[in-house]
Image (cartoon, rainbow, N blue to C red):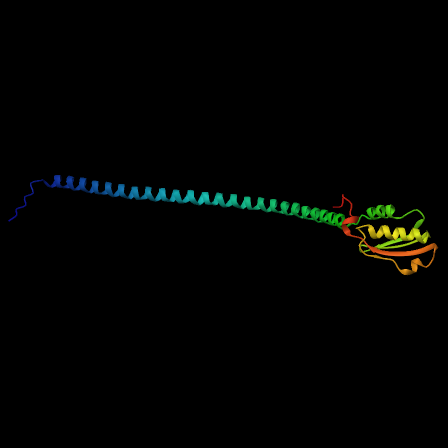
Length: 188
């Protein structure tokens, strides 16, 4: 059996009850205050994260705008370089494809003997057409022989009509020229 005896007077009970409620409200207030502080810390952290993200986004936008300006300038430079390279390629292609007929004329000058005059010389696609006058048939034959001995002129065509006259021989000779023979050292 249990016996409960309350020997405290009524005012003592009220004081104990007030202390109990005061402690209860104090701890409840402390718990509420700690929850509020915790929420404020979380809100402050979220605010800082959002603010940092905003700053990073603004910086990224500024960087993107700056890179767009730089990209436009770069595209402009690339376009200018492309145009310059195209012009350079055209010039180089012209130099590579340009035929230096000076070398052909030098070779013909060494081949043509005295007494032979070239009246007309025309070219087309590495083909040379020569019309001339020889004082005597032997001069013409000597020139024809020298042309055939020259390795740069592989295909020589001289019509038989060139041999009909003995003096003042009007002749025509067609021959091809090897491309490597007429290109000078500067063109290679």
